[in-house]
Length: 390
Ligand SMILES: Cc1cc2nc3c(=O)[nH]c(=O)nc-3n(C[C@H](O)[C@H](O)[C@H](O)COP(=O)(O)OP(=O)(O)OC[C@H]3O[C@@H](n4cnc5c(N)ncnc54)[C@H](O)[C@@H]3O)c2cc1C
Image (cartoon, rainbow, N blue to C red; front, side):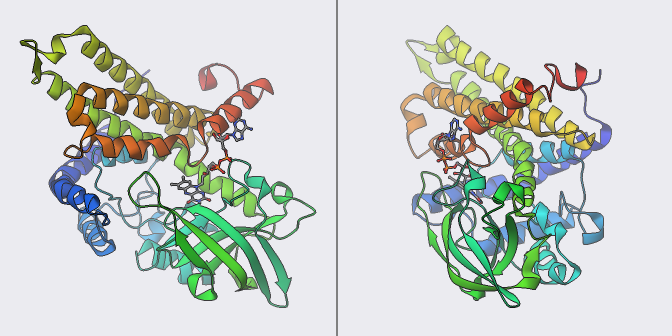
C-alpha cells in the first residue's frame, strides 16, 4: 500500500499552490474589504483575468477533455487542486470548465452553449431544486408542455447557484407527469435568459447568493433538449455526483488553512503568563481537528480514486461529502473558539469561513441524504463494509 503522491501529482499540486500563494492570496485583504461593504469580493472581469493568467501556466479546464482544450485530469489530481483552492477564501476557481452534463450536448448545442461556457464567454447555471422539491428532487413540478416544434415551460426553480448572473440555465422539467421524474418523466432543457425567464436573488448567510428562476410560459425550441427526452433526472444526478468529491476536497483546504491559523495563534497569544497553546483544552481542540482533517483527507482521496478506477463512486463519495462537510464545520468552530473574541470579529476571515462552510452540509445532498445513501446501499447489500478492500 502506497499513500504517497506520484511525482506528477506533487508537481501539479505544488504549481497550483504557488499560483494561489502568488496571484490569489494577495487579494484577500481587498476581497474582505469589499465584502464588508456588501460588494462582490471579485467581479467577473477580475476572476477572468486571473483565470487567463492561470491558463498561461497551463491550468485551464481541469475536468475538460483535451479535445476542448482542457486538462482532463484524473479525479485524484482534481481533488488535490480543489484542496489548494480551499486555502484561500478569494472566490477564484480555474477557468475552462463547463457543467459536466453539457458534454451530452449535440454538435449544434456544443457550439452555442458548451464551447462559449468553456471559453468563459457565457455563464450557465444548473436548476433542478424547486420550492417544493429539494432533497426529494424527483418531486419536481416545473412543467414542459409540447407545442408544435417548441416546449412551454411553467414553474419555479430555487436556490440556483449563479442563477442571477447566468446567460442560460440547464433546467430539469417534467415532460411526462404519469411516468414521474425518476422513471423517464423529466427532461433537461438549455434555456437562454433571452427566452424569457427571470431571476430573483436570494440573500443567504454566505457571501454571494443563489437565485430563484421564474418560468412563466417560456417557449423553448425542441432542439434545446439536452440529452434524450426522459433523461433529465439521470443527468441531474450526474451533475450532482461531481460535487460529492470536489466539495469535501475544498473543505479540506479550508480546514488546513484555519488550523494553521489556530496553531500560530496558540503559539503567540498569552493569558495568565503563558501561551494559550500550553493549555490542554487548546491542545485537544488542535489534536481533534488534525485527526478529523486527516481522516477526511483519506476518505475523500479514496472517493476520487474510486472515480479514477471506474468503480461506482457513490458510496465512497457520500461518506466523503458527509464527513468532510461535518469536519470543516467542527474545525472552523474550534479555530474560532481558539481565537476568542478576535475570532468573532470581522477583522479576521474566520467568521466568514464559519458562515461559508455551513452550506457544505446542505447543498448537493444534505448530511441526511448522504446518510440515507450510505445506509441504504449497505442495507440492501449493494456495498460491503470495508468497500473495495472487503
Ligand atoms: C446556497 C445554495 C446553493 C444551491 N445551489 C443549487 C443549484 O445550483 N442547483 C440546484 O438545483 N439546487 C441548488 N441548491 C439546492 C440544494 O441542493 C437543496 O437546498 C438541498 O438539496 C436541500 O433541499 P431543501 O432545501 O429543499 O431541503 P429539504 O429537502 O426540504 O430538507 C429539509 C431538511 O429535512 C431533511 N430531510 C429531508 N428528507 C429527509 C429524509 N427522508 N430523512 C431525513 N431527513 C430528511 C433534510 O436533510 C434537511 O435537513 C442550493 C442550495 C443552497 C442553499
